[in-house]
Length: 456
Image 1 (cartoon, helix red, strand yellow):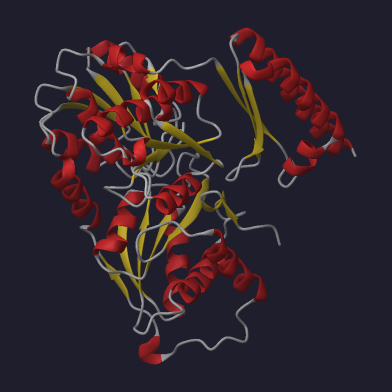
Image 2 (image 1 turned 120 degrees about the vertical axis):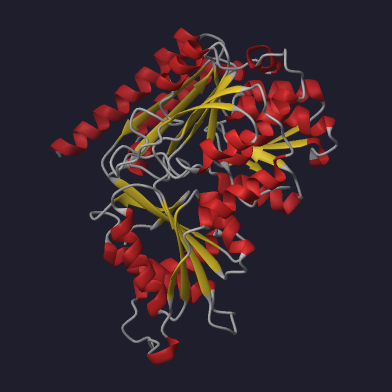
């Protein structure tokens, strides 16, 4: 059996890779593993985004949890960080979110949270996987009053929004914002949140139909957002992904502000407030070299982890740090949340922008960090073939030669995606055309090796 958990839960094409049977098994095993030390009837918080398969998978997941003897509070459509917050706030024993984040509607996923609202460590995921592989045939199943109860909680998203309002500490009166909710989990809360703080809001991606989540919208496709920011003369734009745990901003000139740019501005603001713990930023190996240079100039330390916000979080918790994140827009503000939270990040980012004065534009503020030319290429491969291709002598030699050509003035990173059948190529250097050529050659080799495999 192939490893179930990737870098962000279990994910796959709904009803093919992520089936109701698997969702049931995850619910059953997850309930037993996550609540094995509980001396009372345990409770799960369950939430979902807007994709069509959430009903199917949610029903199966909840059936698995309740059949293991745990109660379920169904929070309906809510952002992933909202599930994490509710899990902690309501004193639940665990949480589960049904979402494939930034992926298109045919994909779905299941993310599990511990009692404190934190994503699971590797050893806990491995225990759940081991139980699923072993099977449940010989297990004693609860009956009678030991079966779990399902309760609907339709004010979960509203409670979460009100929580964000209560900690915002921000007056956005006079600010013109364009926000893109990706037809996803934030489609109701985000417009209400920023309007309640006084902003003039144009809301995009707020008409989910089950199929249009992340389609030509949201944090992975900002073309429409940029057009609206430029066309309306807005101060800036904010784009969330399908489950609203990440954020990408657009400045007043239409320039993208990814996680690296936001972390640079957030670090300065937190430092000025005496809130940047140990003057340290935690990023991943994907973050731009420009973030390192900015940190050096400012006297901060930049620590890099493996790709995945969970690894960023693990380091932050271990070292008691306050700011970390990924270039993709997952930003963790550990003083305020237990996981990446796009709407919270937007609040703190807007606070950083407002602190420089109403007349200072984001397009000027972002000059704090100078990004190095970077190429990111995702090459789709057959399921399960990524490791074989990456380890192939022909590809390994091409990677070695590319690294030699880049020298100390650049960086090269090859990795397989933890959520999709992709090989990701990242190259940084001083010349955009040069590094684009390197990336194209590596992509060509991957595709050739994939073709050879199909012919074989």
